[in-house]
Image 1 (spheres, rainbow, N blue to C red):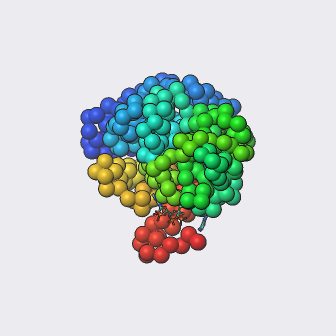
Image 2 (cartoon, rainbow, N blue to C red; image 1 turned 45 degrees about the horizontal axis):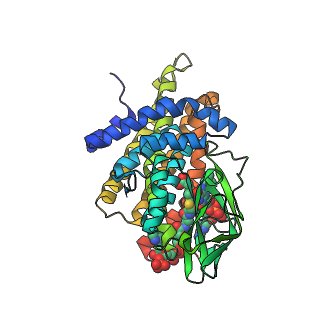
Image 3 (cartoon, rainbow, N blue to C red; image 1 turned 45 degrees about the vertical axis):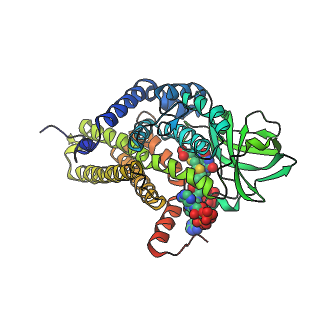
Length: 389
Ligand code: TGC
Ligand code: FAD
């Protein structure tokens, strides 16, 4: 009998609306046409045409697509998730670009910004003409952003920012950085335009993961900003953490894209590859691997869709997002590693996407809250006891 695609095994497509399927098809077509042919080269060289990519993705309408107004499309959360999935099926770095632009930088401005800030930045960011980044993590404050040292002090009406941010996606190519800093009134967010004296964003090199993505340090040395550079609506750590819920949601879907791409590759490879005179796909051990992976992929997709529907109904909680990020990234990286075994030596090359995805997923496992942090969030929800510190 003819083979079933892993995503069709549970007839999950039937749970999507026509509009969601259309958006997914549009993103997939552009990704296959304009991104997939180049991605191995970008990964190998560690360089991406970020500005061109931002314009392409802006033209596609995926930057801030789930936000309303200011040039954003206002789609459902599920449609946004599906777009993340299709982009991450090409490379986690491309989904990262979209996550950071739409769910972190744009969302921070959309949710906490003044009307003037929204008018100034959001339309250009939605179009991909203006690139944003989101600076929360520091060299000595990653999982515990409350330990941040970056400080903003008042000087008359102005603010003076000093500190260092680390591991900031899009940092060196950003036109505007959303920087979180400690003030006398708690953590506040600031919009720092590139080129502001005292601000620089050197790129971090020698990464073995997420090579098709720009990652940078942000250095702030006496950066003077006017009073209206502060985001008026965010006060305390709940400001940046509120943005993280948005980006983490995209990863719940996105990681499944990387896993799907690996599984499709492994199924096709196993069908073609002859070992001991028979197709690799005909062996029970191979089929057990494929079946286990398809089961996890299907379960992960059902979980993502359930969380997406909750989000669209305005009922998604941060703990539920943690369940999704914890499970789907953990399973995706397992799938990528298992698919690598099926490809044998060919699995270690850039000719196939599998090890590139596996390596990328190491970053995905760590950023936006490590798997340990999400376990502790779920543990806290179950016991009422916070075990972070
Ligand atoms: P805690 O005392 O629990 O909370 C402080 C305040 O924040 C509120 N809060 C949240 N608000 C909204 N959403 C959430 N998920 C929230 N979690 C907590 C909380 O209610 C409280 O509010 P208030 O008003 O009472 O002050 O905070 P804690 O210091 O104990 O930390 C909790 C913990 C560990 C869960 C949190 O710090 C955490 O999530 N850490 C992980 C940090 C992280 O994920 N960093 C990501 C940086 S950005 C990134 O990685 C981009 S990657 C690029 C890409 O996406 O592609
Ligand atoms: P640490 O916090 O030092 O953690 C080290 C280990 O300790 C982890 O295994 C962790 O789970 C574990 N651990 C921590 N706390 C506990 C605990 N209480 N109990 C048990 N174990 C614990 N950040 C941004 O702000 N913006 C970005 O755009 C951004 N982009 C990124 C892009 C890439 C490619 C990468 C790799 C990271 C990016 N980050 C970004 C940073 C990312 O969010 C942090 O790396 C992450 O939050 C973890 O922080 P850390 O690396 O300092 O690890």
